[in-house]
Image (cartoon, rainbow, N blue to C red; front, side, top):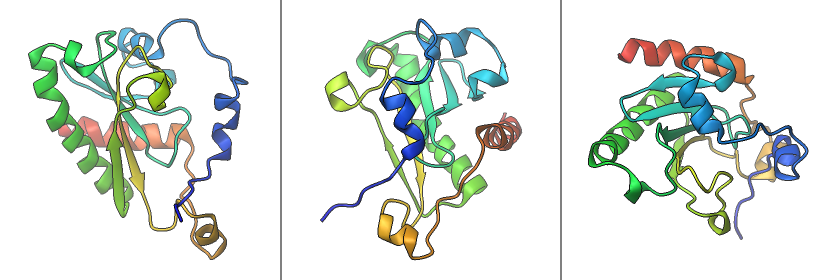
Length: 164
């Protein structure tokens, strides 16, 4: 038997009922500087780190290159060298801020693999807590940690600004 992560708040996104702006939202976030609406919590020379507007869990972050690239092998050697240490740092910040029990870290490359934005690759870093993926666990007094995106953005921006 496998676990199921219930995310009903993602329904409008999955069924196309949310308003999507034209173009790539990663590129828009890269171009817009520090606009809180873009949910960017950190930037490096080659990447941005932003909250997922349709998260699987509280603190769900995405790391995307500043360039519009569809696969990691298209990135410069400098960007490739920056990505994994950045992912480790992002995981450490999330561990400090949210104290999860574990993490999922990975990429969905191509629409068939589950990529919601198949033409701009990105790495997901998702905090996980015991029982968050099992409906019965949720009924048995295990709860998801609900957090407004604006609250999460503020917490994470503050923490990442200390790391600079």
